[in-house]
Image 1: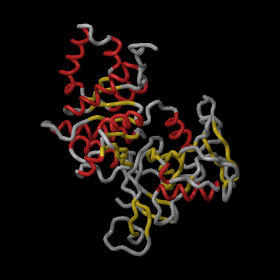
Image 2: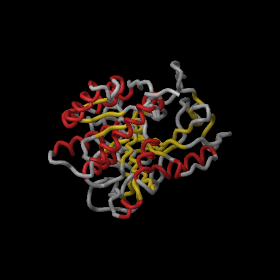
Image 3: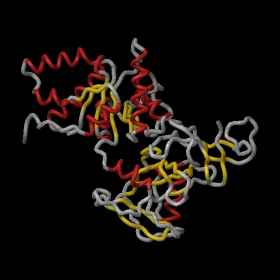
Image 4: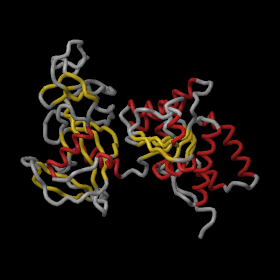
Length: 377
């Protein structure tokens, strides 16, 4: 099966447009007589993408990059182009040779006269929905967030800007499907990033690596940023590789001495280098909306118990989860014993999420309620 470029439209195998999919990062490739796979290459460069195919061929896709910009009051910047009726995110189609990040910076400058900082763009994921203005097409959009910027007047092809209160139940009926079906549901989530604790080894059972791969892929498919220790080996490498391959955003946090030892993953969305292991754990906590422990060793236990203890003390109000109930069964038995003996409060023990599937995990994290702090001020 092949994909074909026709003008600005990339026709690709895709899934039913009622579902949302994520793709890998766009990469530059030369055109092969309009076909993406044959061995004879002609001149020109286009943005091509390996599709994560989950269904049958549907309609041709329009590739775009767009950005979520919110005001100080949380309202969402939307724009309407001349000759159209639907409001959408600012952004547009990449030009030849551009990646998705470069495209959104250029488009926003052209449309709104605003200079975005590439360093302040944080990738959410890639979403596929029905196109707003091109009948019979779907839009494949790489979505970023950006820190608040001042926006005054529209420019170029933009006729109107509007700051949207996306938190209300009754949304306007002139919003693009991408906003209604993907972006606003993402904004309404509690959990947008998850810190995953796991080992730098694979363990003795191949199932553990399979599990790490499934979790990384599942987080990416849900549009959730993976925050982890930044390593390229073992379970750490597996969860990061899977998230990246599925088009997810992955942030690694690693002390300088481990980076110097060439342990860092080379292909992350972003790698933050810190001075100490203590700073690493603090930074991961700052970046995450929830914490999940995969099978691992002493370092995994250290990170897990610190996050859970901080929750009990009221330092944060974020859920902590164990992934793979069978692996963690000896630990949960010990925690039950400690609860019975009066060293752990029942409400703290009950607050620990235990899950075996990504669907169960996300449902439990979204519905989680924090226990009261152990000591109130």
